[in-house]
Image (cartoon, rainbow, N blue to C red):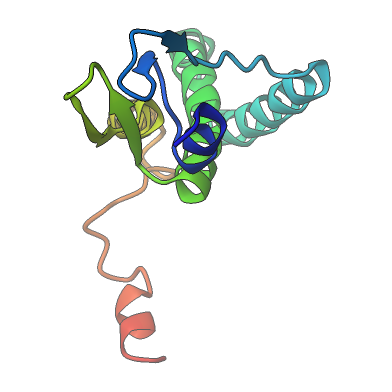
Amino acid sequence: MGIQKLHKLYRVRGVVYMDESEDVVNITEEIEPSKEQIKNMKSQITKEKNKILKLFSSVDKKTQKIVNPLIDNAAYMKCELKRLKDYNIEHGVKEYYKNGKSQFGFKESVESKTYNTMIKNYLSTIKQLNDYLPVASKIDPNDEDDDFDNFCNGG
């Protein structure tokens, strides 16, 4: 199987030995986002940040100073999680690797690992933000009147 065929089937990082010869081909790809993609991502982050800031419009200035870095991080993580999720849907969560003539197989992709780590951090950040919300605005996970039961019962 040639390098082009292998590369189209699997996302491969690192060193690959081809056809049991000593020729080493490094096919690690570094894909830089275009200026348009960067601009689009910044726009999405700003929109997400503004949504969260609306929730904190009634809190005092001291609390706003505390939560601003959390809001920045939450907005970034939400946008990046969407990008990673789309990538994982399109490419899968496994990638092919080959470290030598006899070491090869599949492993969890870097994007999948990043997604799993970041979703935990995102949820932790959202919980911290929720703790800073005024009592009237807080999201109560134990709220019995959240229409979930109606949804489950087809209502």
